[in-house]
Length: 237
Image (tube, rainbow, N blue to C red; front, side, top):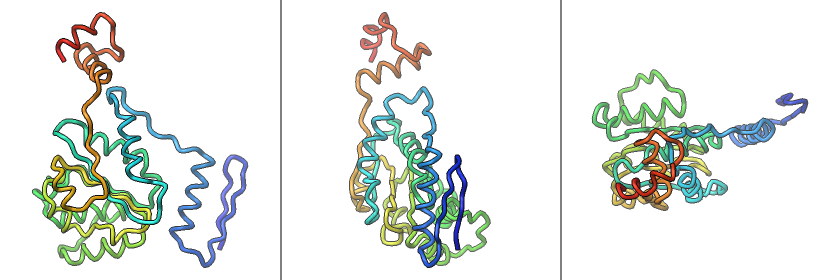
């Protein structure tokens, strides 16, 4: 079986006979991206200092390594930008994975819908299972493990406040394909270490320059820092 594609005057041909499906799909996707060019969505103007943080976090993810599964934790005080950082990172790198999942408030899902609700959310985002009828935790756990086994996945779990939330999800490095990445966001560094992440990334405070720019945006509705505001702003900050 062969697949053909004509893009920008180029003729592409892939021989799909007797080859692993996911590996060949990844090669095809990478080839098309290289031809068309992947455009990273532009960042909102009010996100100050985010680019360097995303780059630092990417370095911790070791995205070029496809030999195993890496788990990275993000921690920091409330309001420092953990969720924003995880979301921007997700938008930037998700095209590199077969399936992706971003749970933006795991603890809230647990409170409202329990473990079953959290597992259904993972199945919905990664596999498109919108109307999963099962009410059996054993079945959903087996479904996650069987469907994601050997699949290169990106899983981001935000606002985790108990290590048990992670242990019961049936999402672990042992059940994901090579090259997969799990990112866990929590205020509590102890939770990340207890779960066994490979590295903890602590979101830093804004430096002096970025702090002044953010202050100017919020206080004066300006995208730049006017020299006349420098001393006043630093006095307040």
